[in-house]
Length: 170
Image (tube, rainbow, N blue to C red; front, side, top):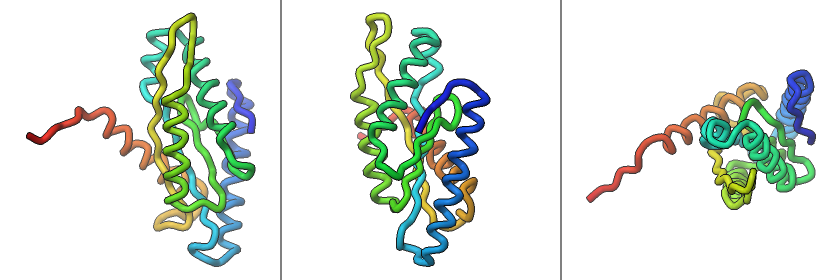
């Protein structure tokens, strides 16, 4: 998979990503077995990306995007599809992968991204990411747009948790 920064190329790639996702949903449907070979999607958002751009500059943000993209692409299995979904958000399609396995993959990606050494102008930039996961078949998911929307909603819920202060009970 290739990730592009130009808008026209990104639009073309996003269309290819969506087409691939829809064909994977149709494949699962044809197999006619609800638990047979599900399709999962992980949405990934690089945490505090605007702060990285504001603090270290857009060239640093670009380096962070490149480093995170490389981790995702290098971690992808042969049939997985990695795409930049917009800004600092990425999506990974995981054919033949249920929710449990998708969570393990997301956790591995979270760990790899958090341990990445992104050095720009002699400064090490710490990068973390938030994840949302959805699986087909599941309730309310009929087409690829539903799968992406469900994963994006799960991502949004995970972002709420990192923005809330941690409360301790006495």
